[in-house]
Length: 153
Image 1 (cartoon, helix red, strand yellow):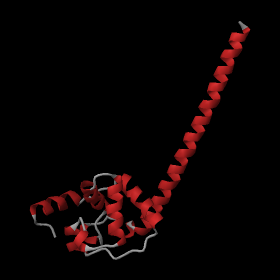
Image 2 (cartoon, rainbow, N blue to C red; image 1 turned 60 degrees about the vertical axis):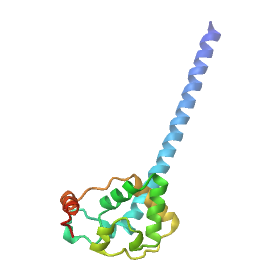
Image 3 (spheres, rainbow, N blue to C red; image 1 turned 135 degrees about the vertical axis):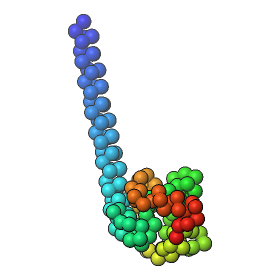
Image 4 (tube, rainbow, N blue to C red; image 1 turned 90 degrees about the vertical axis):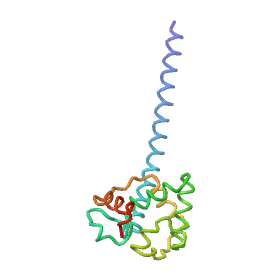
């Protein structure tokens, strides 16, 4: 009987050890993802949102399409995450009005000036953009409706 209790105690201890180890590994993995996301967000804020931020701005005050709109257009035309990233990366590396998916924005703002981005940075930024829901400007729905009716800029 004592051997039985010893075996049970051993199995419980072993189970707890593996459980703690798995939780630590999960926590470490989560921390790595959170660090990567934080770096990506900071890069996005420094390199993209400087021009594309529409937070608290009127439509007439922005100098580039808000990222809510950019992401929406590219997500609709992309088949998956890799396609989304490659399409946006191609645009970022070589902005060209003929390959833009946002023709009305080109008419309104012109072609985005070329920005020198490191490939690792742009990959981080585009992964962040892919998985981030950006706030919709207050005026956005009206802008979309006017565009749909053909009376937008």
